[in-house]
Amino acid sequence: MPLNVVLVEPEIPQNTGNIARTCVLTGSRLHLVKPLGFSIDEKYVKRAGLDYWPLLDLTVYDNLEQFLEQNKGKKFYLATTKARKYYHDVKYEDNSYILFGKETAGLPKWLIEKYYEDCIRIPMHEVISTRSLNLSNSVAIVLYEALRQLGFPNMK
Image (cartoon, rainbow, N blue to C red):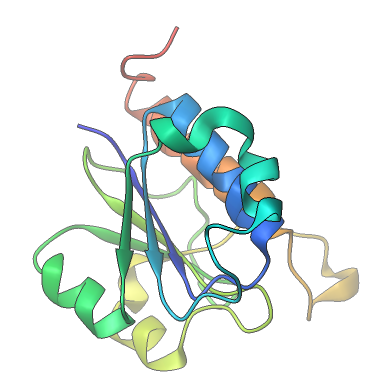
């Protein structure tokens, strides 16, 4: 079963396009939770995703509540700088969902509190503790660790 990348209220079209391309090339599904900071028809999203958009397994939700309701009972991992566990410390499951927040604010505090035991972080140098990696880089790092743990299913 594929992994699921969830972008909650992404703001930068180029990041989403890059993530869409990564999802296609890893056999992962992409879930976008509105509001989006752009239209998925924008040339910047399409340019970053190149000609991969027709191959993308994409689901778009009107809001976070709709996403949570439609995916009730699924295994979630939440990427946040506020987690105590590192992304490589958890055991990823087939068909799990890895959630990432918007570029300027991350995931909502209430969501992090609700799923705190399933929150993960990427280690970063402490020099700039208020900043984090680019969203598309973060998705690639975490997604490839999950795929590694699962034996890179259907990949060569």
